Picture 1: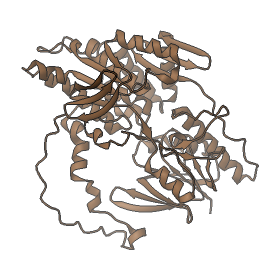
Picture 2: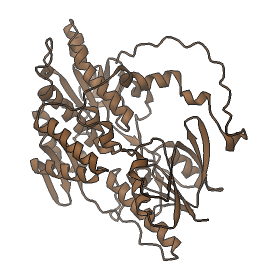
Picture 3: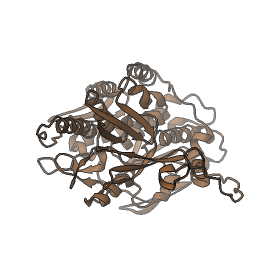
Length: 473
């Protein structure tokens, strides 16, 4: 039997690890909760109508169609039994298990609401395609509904957009919503002027893009102001509901009336990271990330390699590695190298060393900031670098071509290629939360329950469903 490698997660870390094992004498099983690989740095462009889902989320099976040693399985890994080397997976309508000799875990990160998960109902995050499509529907619908409002107070509430978190995602999102309001939509409504929309960027810290350094942070802040974005720093969110948010500032507690909120503040490791750490006797930090060895293995379990956002590892200077795509990409490649050297009977490679290729954030069309080593750029030059880097890492030639075309429409012209939104986009997630997962009622668990694999469990009787309540957001 060939060496069995199970990879959890088809993000940057998992995908690059699999590709690096293309010619290795291993059988790979990839377990992922979706059927696509997500280029997460461009989610905000999906949410603001620039790109489509297919351009930032190509199908995994298509990406890996020429790699014959991979078996792709749909499902969410629920737990890992480190003793029996078994992964327990919850798929759509069926539970199953996968056994491994080596486990590569690249499960990414989750949105953190800092203990207030109820905020998610009114302020969706920016971690997956569903979030982005929901936000797209809410953003474009806000202008449509505002156009119908005879009451000026209600109209202003619908035309106020609040983005929480002034990191790269929040800054990019605020810039694009401002571009929509001030450049793309004016002249298309009879009863409102989109240019009067308020775009408010809120952060508890004292700087936007605080990891980019004072110089670039100041440049980014200036560009946001030029776009008409109101930046509220040293401002902590203490409440979120259907019609607005409550914040604490140096002036005291204040209320911002807004029907459309975006949460781009804070990330945490997925629950699987903590479960693996507990099962392996490893430690986690406050965000749930696993403290790993210098070779990315879980302490005491060299057969488990963790990469990407779910690990806590410091560089030579003692600084924690950031939760960015390059850490996951380089970690995935290193994990594959470690597996191949083990199978070849060679000594382990040098400890993992992260090479920082820099940070990029786009503020608006033709304006970005770039921190690459000692080089700090802003404006058009940084934007060109941003375009080149993102095109390079987009998976698939077709994706690159269509992305360029849509960028041309949005950045050179005044249109948005992907403005279609539906009620289902806006409220589908809340409906699932309200009524539950339909696959839970017909679930096959042959390995766990002993039932014949072809016979689904009988659906339990359900109480009459209440009428759906309007969300108000």
